[in-house]
Picture 1: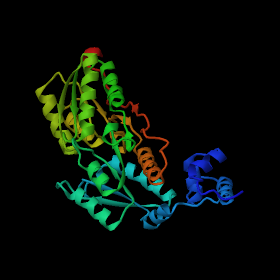
Picture 2: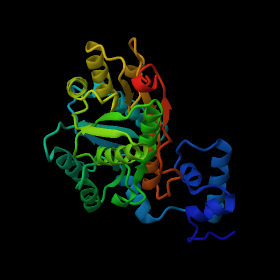
Picture 3: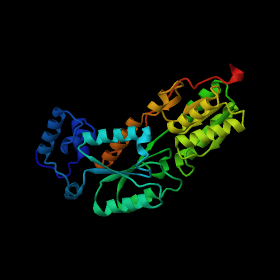
Picture 4: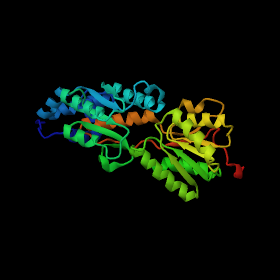
Length: 340
């Protein structure tokens, strides 16, 4: 058969009954396909005279085979955040399988340091793409990365911010699991200890909790925090002392939950329920293990990484949503006194 310069990866995939991703992996020597499938793809490509375009070859030569992540976190505190440690483990697992590496920078909370890092990476061609976390209200990073020509995937609740590039979470579904559970235990006064107010996902969580609580006739108060155990302890201690109608607390992460638990234990208030938006080993330890949402951060890391690698290969990602959360009920799921 005469070579056909118009043959594409999509055309090869159609002829073989395979996905474009599988064909791309086979042609580029990446893991993810069997030896038999790789041989089938290579044989047909040779038969049809397929070859990558000159621009694609040039792009391939320019690649760094590295993915970048910039976290606005104190480097000394990252180890205390189990969610990010698990998520990064998932990222590394997927990158390792693809023969890629991770460039991680923690730049602290000073404004502009993350943006400066992206600009430097782009100028030096240090990374092929980046992953974004902790999206803020009016976040400038997607527009900046578009201007720099850097591919990216972000974790968020809103698709319009970057269509096709968002690993979507279900904030309303998560809020429903937590609030439905606590309302079912008879609680009618709820405190939600949130994270920083500038984060988009915290606004989405607050709105979802408020709506779900209203549907149950539950009164809810909100307090922002910095996600630390110290903040959870301070806010919980003050709230239950000042407002005796608060009989349940939802926290936006496990460290806040651990702090709230310490405050309640010190005050002798084991009658107050606690539920954390993040599950980790911290929630399982101690004499009163904490009810929490299992959100599978390691799998989130793998899915986001796969999305970015597919994007770089010119392939439409197969999955763009995070795995649905589940509620793990533990000892802090106590019934409200009036419903006991």
